[in-house]
Image 1 (tube, protein in one colour):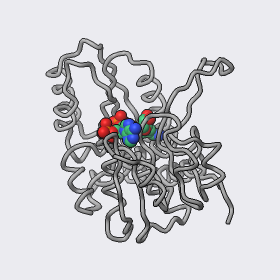
Image 2 (cartoon, rainbow, N blue to C red):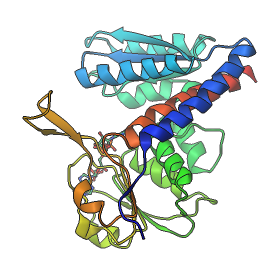
Image 3 (cartoon, rainbow, N blue to C red):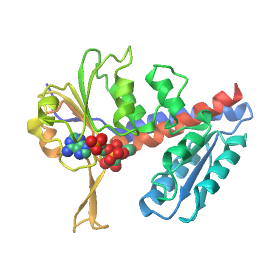
Image 4 (tube, rainbow, N blue to C red):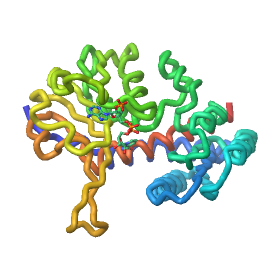
Length: 293
Ligand code: NAP
C-alpha cells in the first residue's frame, strides 16, 4: 500500500470554488448577486488577514463582499444593532462575525443574534441542531464541512470506520463528530480532548484521525496505525529564524514522521485551510439561492 499520499487541499478547494462560481453565475443570471458581509471588531492582525482572504476569495467567485471594521471599543449593543441591520438587509445573504471578539462582547450572544438563514459560519444553535439531527437545511461549520468534502473526494470509506477526532471545540471538534456520525457517513466516532486519559490508545485504533487541537506535534508516528488517514486541522506558528516572517505554519501532526505510516495525509499549509474558505463561499451561495426561493 502506498504511504503518505497527499490530500491536496489547494486543488480541491479550487474545484469547490469553480463549482461555487458556476452557481453564483446562475444566480446572477436570475438577477441576484450573493452578498457576504464580514464584521471585524478590533485590530487583531491575524483576524485582519483572515478577513482579507475571505473577502478576496468571495470576489473571485462573484460573491459581493463587504467588510465592516469596528473599533476595539465597540460595545455589545452596537454590534447587535449592526447585526439587526444586516439581518434585515435583503442584499446580504451571509453574515460572518470574525472571532475572537474584544472581551466586553459575549460571542454567544452575538452568534445567537444572527439570522440562522444568514449564519454561513454555521455557529448559530439552530444550525448546530439542524446539522446534528441530520437535516440538510442547516449550514455546517466550514472547517468540518471542508474535511467531509476531502474524505468524500479522496474516496475514504467512513462506513463502520473508527474515526478519532482530537478536540471538542464548537467550531471544529464537535461539529466534525456530528457530521461523521450521520447515517450514510456511518463512522464510529471517538472524540478526544485534554481530559482524555490515554490519547494514543484511541488514535492507534483509528482508521481516520482528525486532529484539531492547536498544538504542534501532538500526533506522532507511534500514535498512528499503518494505513490510517490523517487529517490535520491544526494551525500553529513555530519560530523559524530562516522564514521571512520569523515563524512557519505547522499543523498538529508531526508530518514528516506520520507520512511514512499514514495512507493519506493533509499537509499544513495547503490542506484543510483552503477548504475552510471554499466551504464558506459554498454556504454563502446556498444562502443566496434560498433567498431566491
Ligand atoms: P480550541 O477551541 O482551542 O480547541 C482545542 C481542543 O483541543 C479542545 O477541545 C481541547 O480540549 C483539545 N486539547 C487541548 N490539548 C489537548 C491534548 N493535550 N490532548 C487532547 N486534546 C487536547 O481550538 P479550535 O478552534 O478547535 O482549533 C483547533 C486548531 O485548529 C487550532 O490550531 C486552530 O488554529 C485550527 N483551526 C484551523 C482551521 C483551518 O481552517 N485550517 C479552522 C479552525 C481552526 P479541552 O476542550 O479539554 O480544552
